[in-house]
Length: 179
Length: 204
Image (cartoon, rainbow over all chains, first blue to last red; front, side):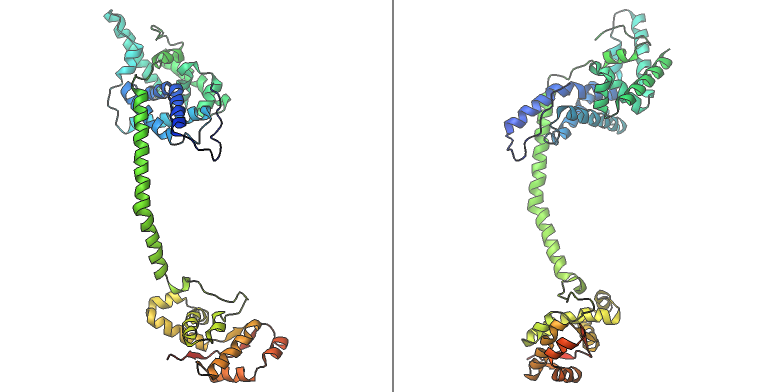
């Protein structure tokens, strides 16, 4: 996935420029991931970006300790997921969840087709919402960037076998509900 | 984003389409601003801690140390089991002031052993001035075990009493006058027991 970067050598003085460059690298490779994870929970781009930003701020406090980029991404994903759920529960969500439906059912001009597409999109999100959290995170991570089960396992901090079984279960439940 | 993949057979792919979004153009700048603001806030917190919280904590510790109960203050007791004569007593005979202060301090420890009541409890019941008197009485009345190495100190105490710097009771005076420290050190079990240490400082 990403190259492993060694921790800052002990006793090395890390310049502000080094830190800024390091942060830029992390932002470039992980910001989309964080926003997508947050969006999968909040279904609103503005809220998702707010949560992802806050997650980055918190993660930046541990940049020195999480020099291994894979570990950083995994940590960021779990932090973002948790923060998005907290954000949702706290009632701070400012937008409706229409963003997500609109993304799945863009307007084509044919009213009948558009209505049907929106209905299906709504059903899909409802089905995803109905999934238990443990299945939902795995499903979302598998959907983002076409992650393999090994990558999902690394990001979610789970054994690969567990990811496979959860993904299978999530797919099965979704198909049942969408049938 | 692919459109029209709303079939129920591939929900993961459909979800992937829905989540195929990029952060807005200003996202990176906002994150950097947020991180900078966070660092500034933490620096302010650190400065506040250094300027206010740490000195306050140190002051608190100092005040607490000064006022903590007397039984929690350090005592220089002999390390030998059963030896309750504090090492300060050896010094006590040198000057009247030393004898007064150190024997009184030591007396509190002896009082605790003699009465089975902690000095703190005693202090709670009687107040600080009273506890000092009680401690002194308990110290004077309690049998004192003198380790072999401190026999010379006891002899010096008797000598100090003879010179008028401290006053000792008759039992101790008799004992001190009759004892041959060298012989006692050779023959007596260690430690040996002195009947009572009746010492009273003479305050000029």
